[in-house]
Length: 131
Image (cartoon, rainbow, N blue to C red; front, side, top):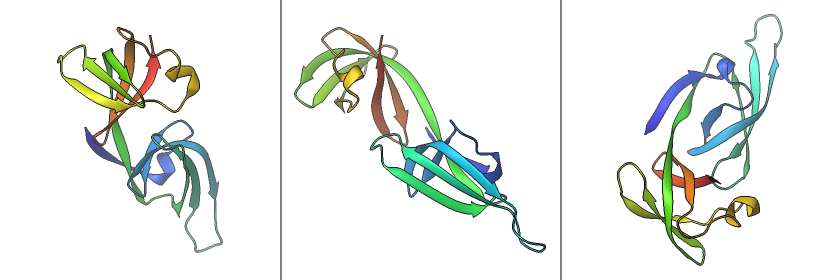
C-alpha cells in the first residue's frame, strides 16, 4: 500500500491519480501546448474512488503527481448490518468492517457468505464487485 510517482504527461483515461489527498480514476485528459516559450499544460478530470466527487488538476506535463497503489483482494461476507458489511479476507482470514457500497447493483448482491472483491487504497477499503 502506498503511493508511486508519475508525471502528468503519462496520465491517460482509466489510470489512477491522487488529487487533494483523494485517490481518483482519470476520466478525461486534455493537453495544450502554450506559446513559443511556454511549457505544455495538461488538464486532468478525475472521479474519486470513494466519494464519486469530480476533481480537476491543471499542471505542466512534466510535473510529478502521486499515483495510488491499489491492492485488489477477495473476501467473504460474514454479516451485513445496516450500512456496514463485515468481511473476512480469504488469504489472511482477517475480519474487518467496510461501508456498504453506494453503487446499487453491487449493494443489492451483498448477502451472507457471498464472495466480494475489495480494493485497499491508501489505508481505506471499498467493495468493488460481488462474485
